[in-house]
Image 1 (tube, rainbow, N blue to C red):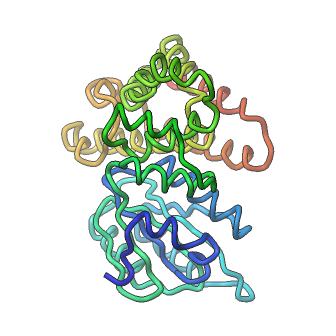
Image 2 (image 1 turned 180 degrees about the horizontal axis):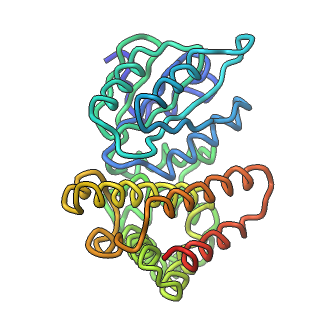
Length: 320
């Protein structure tokens, strides 16, 4: 389709300024939310357009009307960038209403939307693309050049793909940080660290399990080797998502039972959906999410990253 470009063409052919100036909707489809990619994408938008990406949360038809009011109004013709995230259990009718509205949205602002269901462009001001499940070496090189704006071959990536035929996009974005700094000790790095780093999904799953089980010692032990692998923006997005998923599960489990609740969430640890959810209330999880959201705002305005550890300790000690 005309407004459904290849993912890599979108990254290489369109600048951040062109995306914001030309399109009212930039939508990405993937089976799970791409946390690291969304962080990098928002950073590009904000760095090159000087326009902050504002998150709009919605949960029902009332907040949907507030979103419409925000997206339809522009003060003195000022163009803004918004992204939309659900903040609770969404009725299928509400989801369909939001999708239908966004597909027809033509401004005056730019909406960046990540969807886990296929999303098609319906007019020239909308651009939609599917995020690939895995990257080849050629794909990795394109994404690397997009992130770091360095157009040169990488010995790191060539060795990496000699070991693995393809890599998940989120995994690739994580490993690119090492691509930038690994020098003469590359062989030792690949022998000692790559086997550990490629297991990040399992490690994050275990970390989340300890977090919701309130096992403080195991949590910080598991966190230590992972903490520097990802930027703080990733951790904020990761825990915001995890806490909201937990809130959705707890709220649904108390009303409809844990079996029904499982159909509304994804990527929560098994131990949480089996037993640990009983130790939480909706109010406690809402408070935890609000505190992390406030920290996110403060961090973007110069507050120390140490506040994230304070949030960890506060959650692990006070939630019961």
